[in-house]
Image (cartoon, helix red, strand yellow):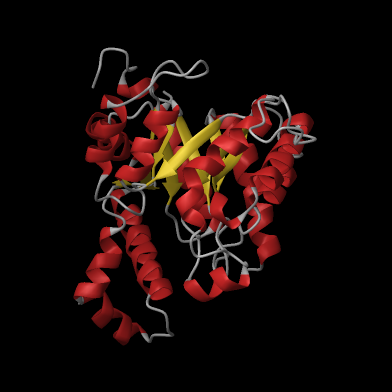
Length: 332
């Protein structure tokens, strides 16, 4: 890690909120928890919360990040809120500029815009979204078009985002491969790696980003946000049980069909199940002290300037306690 990095204990912590719908809950319950989460995170000292765009997923309610951000922002005062991210090929750059320009006018200085090129869903749902299968090919040009609308330097003469024009909403490139790292470096934008579910290329992508970074006026230095899972609890045993339940829930959700507990055991032990579980490779679990020790090592590994934490807990009360334990020990 370069000398310009802060010490691990001072690296900012942020949160990603999937607006999970736990068993027996509704989307409204998930949104109420998102507000509670943000209010608590704000009081504890977290830097930002991001909401990810997913579609046609029964356990995730964050299909419309801009709407959810507006709701949470109206119930908080200072914490940064953003998309982590908007899947830009699903949308017109002008529409996204207008949406996030509106948010920036309503909540100045608090809005972030992370951008990804994946669909955030399956092939059939892509069709329902009216997404062109080749839309991702123009992602670099779409990012530049969007940036032009937000910085009052529109690449299309006479076309402006109202609201949006001149709001300078900061853009972040999201990625899980070398493509996003190279693009973020080329455009001089911060880079956020999705290591909370796609751990494979983390260190290589960050190195490519740092080695090839082209300074921009707004971001003269490279800036890396690395995502990591956290399961903190009041004892090592409780954390282990929460981790076990989270892993079983992850495999069950991704197996694509209803499974009995015995069938789930078999799937988890299979090569396919192990591939799903490897998505959680970067997970800090245990007591507050154990989690902090892991995260400090992860900062060194990832060369991160900021950590984006995915709290992995089996219920709303558990997730809030997870957040509190993490903050109490990291910000001490």
